[in-house]
Length: 144
Image 1 (tube, rainbow, N blue to C red):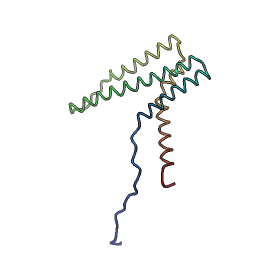
Image 2: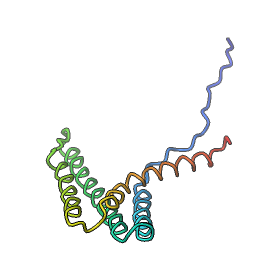
Image 3: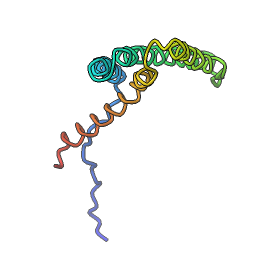
Image 4: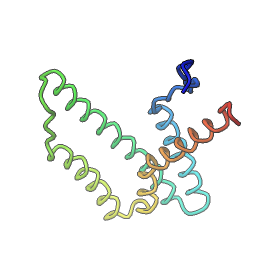
């Protein structure tokens, strides 16, 4: 073995970017608006309104979860104890959203399929954000 070993300097890698909640929410809003317009044009007015209301419910669900989790972890950080998650609080969120969906279903005011697609907007936005990060990472890589 040789005595002239030099430490290997790792190539400078791009720092890992934090998840952009703002961009995900913008993508979710764009999907809700474009989905409702496409629903109006290609399916029906009830479907388009369902997608729009579903998108609004997705925003409500997101912010409700964000606020409730922030309270739990802020309380845990202030008291220095493990966060005790009260299942009833989290179950209540689902119960309220389920009741809202049931009311729309019972009244047949909007298309339930459109409403569910609108509520799934957050998941679609996360997938789109993932693709965006994959392709921007590939094309900005210096090894290509």
